[in-house]
Length: 202
Image (cartoon, rainbow, N blue to C red; front, side):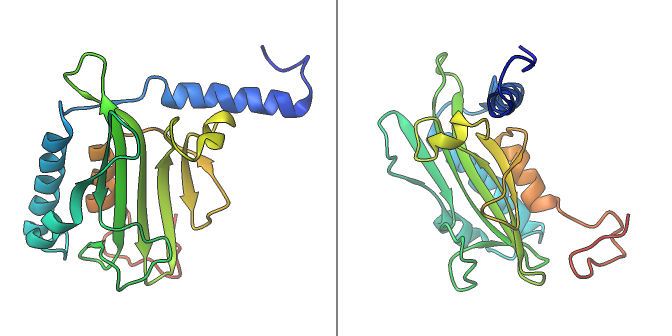
């Protein structure tokens, strides 16, 4: 339905839900067959980045910060990378890049029906840029979690750009696609130029 016979608010919701369907259906599978193996894969990924000097956080700290936590629901898993730190307290545990930016994340998943891969249910990946006092965060809200209202309004997968109360639609990504961006990405297009005042020339 194109929304011509709907009231405007219903039409907007229909479009949001259709967009969510294109973004999130189907969600990408996690290329790992159990949570403990996924944990080792992510730890090893970050340790390699630390050894490459892309991260200031040491390998020993990574093994302490990246861990499995007791899930809130049966048959799910919760994998955490440093404490949730939305107040951006520099004294809290964090995974820090060589340029001073830091991030934290968590991933919620369950076994996929074929049991050979894990099914992604939700995630929260946040980067903080202390020199510019700004953050961005990719969220995928679990349909079984506390933010179910975002799913109902077509915002299950979204991006926050330095504002908690503003959400932009974002593609659903795998944990390693997000880590590629958080560890190796978010760099000026011209590496000889620094970001000044949060702006990069076009």
